[in-house]
Amino acid sequence: MTPSHHDADETIGVVAPVAEPVGSTARAAEPPAATPTERHTATLTVISVAQFIIALDYSIIYIALPSIAADLSLRTSLAQWVVSAYAVLFAGFLVVGGRLADRVGPKRLFVIAMVMFGLASAVGGLAQGGAVLLAARGCQGLGAALLQPAVLGLIGTTFPAGPVRSRALAIWGSVGASGLATGVILGGLLTAASWRLTFEINVPLTLLCALGAAVWVASPGDRTPPDRVPVLASLLGTGTVLTLALGLTLSASDGWTATGTVSCYLLAALLLAGFLRNEKRSANVLIEPVLRGVRSLRVGAGATAFYMASVGSEFYLLTLLLQARKGYSPLEAGFAFLPLAVMVTVGSTTAGRAVRRWEPAVVLMGGFGVAAIGLGWLVVTLHSGSYALALLPGLLLSGFGHGVIYTSMFIIGTHDVPPEHQSTSGALLTTSQYLSGALTVALLTLVLGNSASYLRFRWSFALITAAAVAGLILIAARRRLLSRPVLDRPEATIGSIG
Image (cartoon, rainbow, N blue to C red; front, side):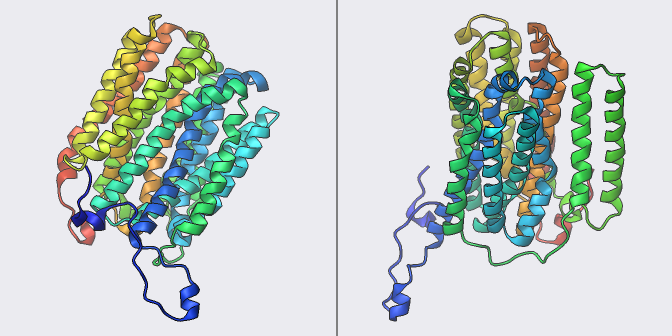
């Protein structure tokens, strides 16, 4: 829908600059100040490209994974950590990144994180062994953990709550959704030449984003007073997920009763107990008390977790199905993802328009419903030899649902959050997303086992279908709460988790 001239104050776009009166020579030599709408456009462009890079890098690795494992002689259980090392470090330090964005400013953190991400990508592209590659992936995840909340913080401080922010989030979400899908297609094209290009492609993009932010993005005027960053809480939380995911991996390769497996689960339990104790008694916690009772944030965190456990993990399963089971080459697998890529973008764009007419909760329910139908179709037909008749319908439906979910879940999650906590709340949403992704990949690796038969693939797709259904049920059960207006008083956003 094209806004009218009366909606100019809520429109994200470029308008003609306002003429300045002629002043002194020194003043005339200064470049004309950008209008608010021009700043909005510049900021949205930079952060959308950054989100595209994050999403692209997370998904592009799936197509390249078999080639990486073969070239560096990585076992299947170890090759999984090319994905998980990124996801766990990303999720584990997102809230730290959110606190840093709130304290030092999202623009400054954005530039630092983008440079860090680019350097890690360069090292990964040059890696000659598995240890260096996994370290580079972990550093990429850490850089992304600082970058993502900086992006969300810039959205929260640049675009006022309401239609303007919803439109910005819709555009940002659409670009991110297309990055997730484009990464799989581009991964096939680049891997056909060399898997190293899947890392090196990030380097020029990150440098351009860092330069664009330094030149075009304005620094927010107000900033939260300095406070301690919850490093201990993040280490405890990250260690919990890391050891739990490692335990699931060892369960698949060594068995449930192996010494290493049992040790990982015991260590995960101890780290979790330490994390919960720290959250209860420490003054420097990971989840600030003011955010624990924000209903939209709690529901949004659940939605992002079910998103990643369903359509967010479809990329991993589909890549293995096409290459390991059906014998597709990386390039063929990349092109097989093309319909999925197109429908993710279509679904995200549709959601951006739909939330202007209907409640975001209704849109999100529709996304989970369509995704569940598409994934369920794949459960039934994945063994067939016909791509067009068996896989394509499921990919079209699940791809559309994917795009709808991706856009609308962030609109719901940040709706009731106070402006001064936008960075941290955005980090919590994405933490839930990627922690779920890391654990789901580990669980799917356990279900698939070493044989990766059609039966095991069917069980794996059934598992992510169930996650989509669970997401639908969650939003349906909480829809009435999300529809209630938020009162302009402290009690409206302070409560307990329950």
